[in-house]
Every structure is written in C-alpha cells, then in structure tokens.
Image 1: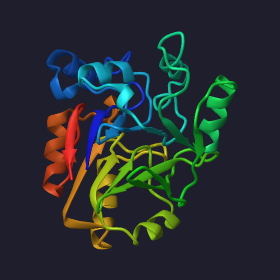
Image 2: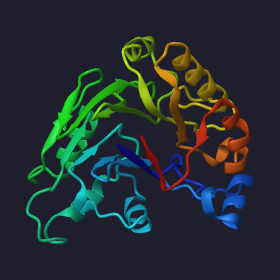
Image 3: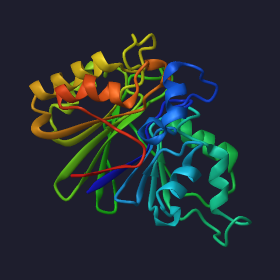
Length: 268
C-alpha cells in the first residue's frame, strides 16, 4: 500500500495566498519542497482523500488521472478540504459520464452540502461516523474523532489493506480521550499527521504545532500504537508557523518524524 501526499499546505498554502511573511517570501524565491498546495492525499492511486481547490493542479503536476479513483473520502468541511463546486466537472456536459464514477464517503455536514449543491445528481454518497468502520473494495477504513470543529464530526482516517495500516490525521488537534483509548487497539505502519502551526503556539485547539506533534507521537510510541519501524510524516503546514522545510527537518528528524512535502510518495 502507498499514499501520495498531493498537498501539504494549510488553508492558504505556502507561499500564502497574500502572504508577505519570511516563509512565503523564501518559498517564492526557492520553490521545490517549499511550495505547498492545500492538503490532500491519495492511497494506491485510487482512494482520494479530500478535494481541495488545488486538486486539478495536483493531478496535472503528478500525472494522475481522476478517472482512476474508486472512492473520495472526506475528513471535514473546511473550504481548503472540499471545493464542492468542482465536483461538477466529472459529469455531462464536461464529460460523457452520466454518473459520478466513484463513491463519496463523508460526514453528515459534507453530505448535506453535496446534496444541497447537487440534489438530482447520480452520486453514490455514504455517510460516515467516527469509530464506525466501513469497507471499500480491498480497504477497511475506520474514521476516528478529531478535535477540530465543535459542531461537526471531523474525522481522521485509519486505512487498512493486506495487513498494512496507516492513519491519516490532518486538522486533528489534540485528540479527545476517547480517540486515544480507541487507538490503543491498533498498531500503525504509518502516521501522517498535521503540523499546522510550526514553531508557534497553537492558538486554535483544532491544530498542532511542532511541540504538540512530538508529544502526540511520543504518546503513541509509549502505547505501542507506533513501533520502532513505524514511519511518521507531517502535513498541513502553515506559512504562519515560521518554518521552512529545512527548519522542519532540523526540528523533527531527531524525533524520527519526517516533514512531508507535495508529491511525496510513501510506501508501506
């Protein structure tokens, strides 16, 4: 199983849409791993996670085809994770398709948003709930509850196939106790975890900074959820975190945590 990090930036990417901070200026001048589009990923080229405004550019950059998708799985309803108006481009008159060629899995808030935008469209839409697993082809997916939006069941995703298991955890904050307890029943081969606020204090409970990422990872290692062989990779970096990619490497690699970057392919 593999996962490709299509985007690893927070809500307005890096460089920031209107960012004139040092991280944004450095990214514009140097490019490469410093450029971060809005966070999204894809598992084995077929299970798409989130649908940000940068999706088209991400697919073009990595020579990927949305017709390969069999599932689109959402984590939560923030605008940088769901560009609902762009779902229309899969169907007539933009293509010859008369039905959406993949299943959408999403929480109630997102399901309502999609149904409100496309009330009569042939979309296979399945509502998901934290701690209730579902199957899609060879995959078993277990959503777990994130700490992000109080009025919404924001979900991180445990994805399993052929004895391999990853946890995709973006916009997670410090998990509630029920999530930590639930995770004790799992052993992960890979954790992809957000690091939105970099070196700065997280003023919003729904995000992590470098310090809290390290704390969460060490807690999971202590509980055996992460083994010495488990990989940990970060995503969802914000330019306001005052961290260039090289700064993230210096801060995180000593803790056996790898800073993710756009286009990164991780095999497990």
